[in-house]
Amino acid sequence: MTQPAPAATGFGARLANRTRPLRFYSITPPRESTPREDLARVGRLTVERLAPLGLDALILYDIQDECDRTQEARPFPYLATVDAGHFRDEHLADWDRPVVVYRSVGKYEPATLKSWLAEQDPDQVATVLVGASSRHTPVRTTLNEALSLWRDAGGAPPMGGVTIPERHAQRADEHERMLRKQESGCSFFVTQVIYDLTAAKDLVSDYAYACRERGIEPAPLVFTLSVCGSLKTLEFLQWLGVHVPRWLQNQLVHSQDPLADSYEQCARMASELATFCRQLDVPFGFNVESVSVRRVEIEESVRLAAYIGEILAD
Image (cartoon, rainbow, N blue to C red; front, side, top):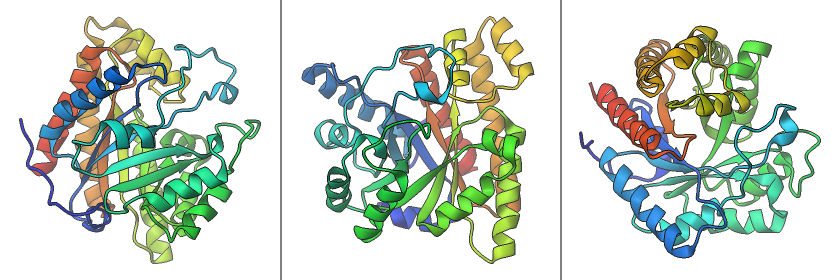
């Protein structure tokens, strides 16, 4: 079903509308080796798929290798991708809504990052600055240096932060990280892919009550959901650090249709998290991504984004 388009306002205005849940969809730009004509085709297909959904923004990831984050073998080989900002500028000209461009800041020289930040239209571009995956990773720019560059650019474009419910389940302090990031200028948060509903609700609850204790407004918390259509995709999600509860692992491993089962789980989580956030008066939203390049999984992720739009409109 085609969704009504959001009001034609800038990204900051959409964040300020705390009564309306945010809806994002995220993609990873194509590989660096992709021919230019194929890059143009991917851009057109992306716009055709997503334009009917009435999204608030498209997220463009900026991936890094992350092999030093874990000793586990990477299920899929790391392949460098086209720069996210370049892909937006050159191949998404027909996308008429804001874009959230992730920046793995360690890959960039400070001057390059500073120039990019200064050139962005804050109504049309937001960013999420991401640090190194490990303290052992060599970097050109640290996350603290990148934050200073963002402040030097006048706090534009709007900046979001990454938050990880699984880390909260282990350390019970992720909400404190969120508050520190909020003090540093983050105006919204996007989670890692979630399959552990309890961890996500624990994070929302601790964050909501911590904000009340400090007398501050919680920033919008956008939950990332992703369908899983194969055991290889499941393995990759777990390699990324996504906690898939044991019962759900068993269900997906033994299912005749893991894509359908994961879709149903994502749909249930979206409904329950929406209700929970509204009860705690925490502004929220959903980001749908596909970690697979398989067409069937991409199409199912688009269907999930459409479904979430319907339940949020009720």
